[in-house]
Length: 154
Image (tube, rainbow, N blue to C red; front, side):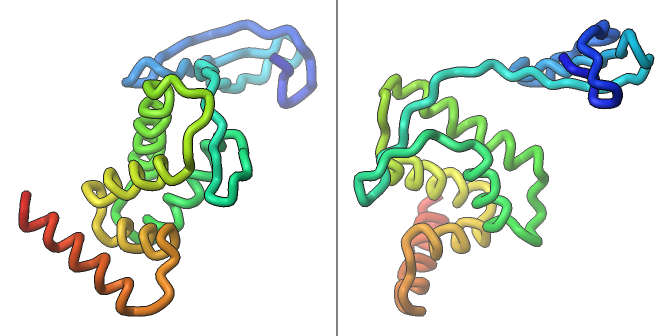
């Protein structure tokens, strides 16, 4: 690991800790050349399936792209960045459990819609309006009716 201060390659690990889910290792390091301390994070790299878009294009899974979309949907809502990270972790676990090399992006979109409706209803409606490409207020109202009906069932 290269020191971010002096670019030296030799350092020692001072402390290692796992996050609560045991999926990320946080390492506190000290550079052997300049004695500066810095932190690194390690995450297991797994092969994620390729997404097949509506128009047939294929693109690799992009965790950051999903985070940005969720942050927009959750903007000014009482949802922490940790909650968004955990949400995306759960979507990634579902993708891994599928065991497929390719998955339709619509499958992921439906997972997000389903899970987001339980996390925050306003964020759900925001996401749905973009995901389902509402063209007018009537489509928006139809989605709200579905949300309210599902809430009454639970």
